[in-house]
Length: 201
Image (cartoon, rainbow, N blue to C red; front, top):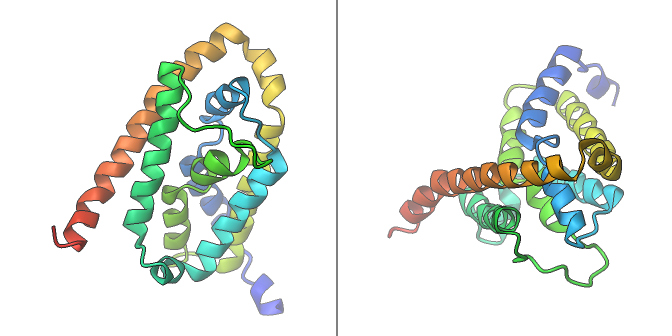
């Protein structure tokens, strides 16, 4: 345990934090969260960030072995996440509901907030790749800092909406809907070719 904490390096923590923050892009997701709240998909900040953190930790310590257990590779996982992002983007751009608000008590907290908006395929893959360069303790601290910021942002959605105003939120919703659509298509394109090749098609 002492050896574990003796590896703490603030430069590494900052590096990990920046990488994960850029990929998760919680501030860029604000219009998406507001859009879901306005359409009746309630987001619970603690539940969403706790599930996202749990997903990150599970994949960090088990990695591709967990996916292989179910016969799934990381590229197929990314393609599945791309489909969820694609439907969410269509909701924002077209103003129609494709992901139904099921009565399971979690609203949109787990899907699509925890996954794939926070703990998405890109962020999970990045987290796994960081293990080759940084000490585990520094990666975990950098990840935890990101999760704390995610919680604060989701918690302050109503205030952020009031500060921005309905008109600005509407424009941002459409703009980021198109951006999210592009991200989903890029994620799909980058991984579907590998999935098809691996399947021998």
